[in-house]
Amino acid sequence: MHRFLDLWHKLRRSDNFYSLAGNLVYAGFSMLTFLLMVRLLDKELYGRWVIYVTATALLDMLRLGLTGTAAIRMISTNDGLERDRSIAASYHLSVLTTTGLAVLFLPVYFLLGPEWQASYYGPVLLFYPLLAFANLPFHQATMICQGAINFQRLFVIRGLNGFLIFLGISGYILAVPNPSLFHIIGIHVGMNALSSLLAFAKNWDGHQTWRHWNAGMLRRILQFGWYSTASYVGSNLLRSSDTVIMSLSAAMGAQAIAIYAIPLKLVELIEIPLRSFTATAFPKLSRAFQESRESFNRMLSEQLVGTAILLVPILIVLLLFADPLLTLIGGAEYADSRDLQRTLVYIITVYILLLPFDRYSGVALFALDKPQLNFWKIWLMLGANVVLDCVAVFVFASLPMVAWATILFTGLGILVGWWYIFRETAFPVGLLWESAGSMSKQVKGLLQRKTVSGEG
Image (tube, rainbow, N blue to C red):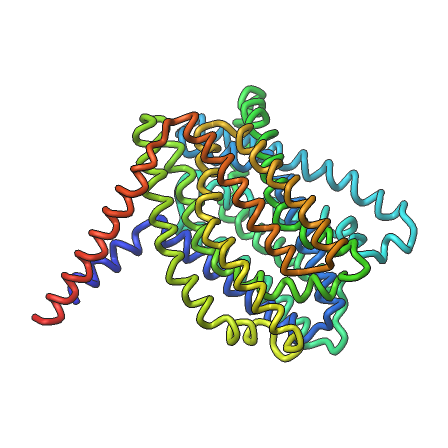
């Protein structure tokens, strides 16, 4: 028992624990919101909400990718005044890009006719500028926490944001008999603004460093940011291109998007630990590369193998309990498409197995200060996905083929990304086996100690 408590206290002090806990709490509230929406909203309204969320996530990547990744890397490798300058320069760029989007989007919305305003993407033009200003301090705070490896604070920030969004949207849907998409979006914007208000009031967003910005640091962030922005936009397009292309198909449309979103919810849940571990890995890999290529390669191998091992039991549970999990998420409203959803889950399981190798290749290239290489990798994957999706949607109108397209472009990205890493660091493949063996011995030793302790 004493050894177990020591292990628990050690785990609680780790960065991965708070990163994972923050993502779990946020995802938990998101899942509760999803369960309510998918049961209480009709398929058309929910499909329109999915389109709005997908489009705004893509725009966030465009806006935040320009500053976030470069700032995280600079914050993790600098301290003192240089760190303050990094934060200040990223804040200036975030304000400028957010203002630019508002100046562009709002006039376009009002200049277009009523037919476009009522389309799937009309709410995006109207509300995204408001959302971008509402969540700007919140996103700045999360960026600073990640760069400074302060995942305890990040846990609080993300947890509160998820709770407020759940509280606002669920309260509205439960209280109003005929919910409006515009009202739901307005509440979403408002809850993000409350999260930002807290971050600003507590000085977590770094606004107190505003006066330390200089043109030289701003140029450094921009130089890195152009490629990271393009990479993040491409990465988000990889996730959202399925939705966008299906939304253009008369044979599929919003209802097919709503059905496809249910098994993808399971993928989002499984991605939580992956996002958590890559978030902590990025600043650590950046620091390791400052030391030596050998330190970088060992750190990358340990992070990748550890994450892949942790995903295996989660995948087993997903395969064994696919039906009850789909029923829990989709409810009776989507029971008529359960066989199709089950097929999608089985296909997507292959994609999940590939995810750690793809994600860590991207994180590694950023840490190596080679964002341009990740840019080419991502956009090559995107081109392959668009072609495959168009065939799956417009020729065959098949959701399983859309899922298979995801596997194919991910495999292509893994090949390209790791080829770049081998070229830059001479990464020895044997390190992966060495890390796997080391972790297996650690787990075996832990189990043996528990057994001896239990017998005693």
